[in-house]
Image (tube, rainbow, N blue to C red):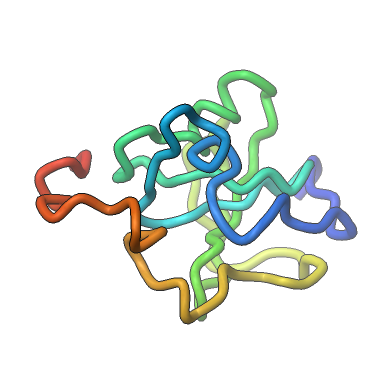
Length: 116
């Protein structure tokens, strides 16, 4: 899987773009860029930052950043891989963080805001 740097750590425990937004946003599930480690929110999340990161950078692979998930997605080829290279830890968000998150920013009607 050319374009993956397994030694780059994730940018943090949550969506880097949601965290830096004004006001800060929330996410449903997280994806980790295989090339630079940027953690962004999934396409079901309101802001879809992982896909936006791909569009802005051309970094083609993301790995799920959810506990227990090891799959990779190739944006260029639109292909799902059940697994790929082992990435440097941590390999997921903290399990206690839950989803959606962060809990203090998730609206009560959060399901209405998801993209399907």
